[in-house]
Image (cartoon, rainbow, N blue to C red; front, side, top):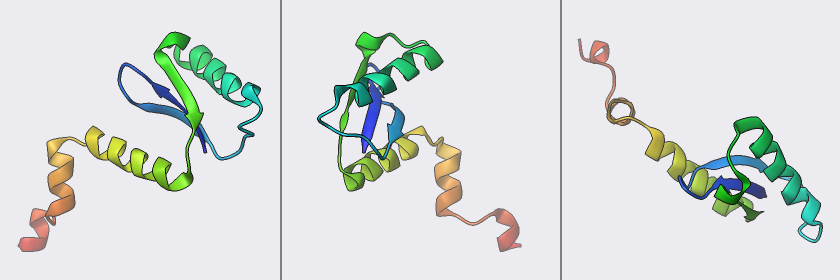
Length: 84
C-alpha cells in the first residue's frame, strides 16, 4: 500500500494498493496529484509504503479521531426512540 500523508496534520490524504517500491515515479506521481488537487505544498507531504494491516489500523485511528463527541456517543448508545 502506498500513501501520501500531510506532515503538519498527520492526516492520510491519498492511498493506492498498487505500485512498485523500486520505481520512485509511483510515489512522486501521487504527491504531484495531491499538490495539484489540494494545493498542499510538497514539502508538507510524506509518502511511502506500508503493509495493508498497518494502513487499515492507521486509517481507523484517523477516522475515530475525526469523529465528534456526539458521533462517538451514537456508536455507544442506541437512539432514544429505542428506549421509548
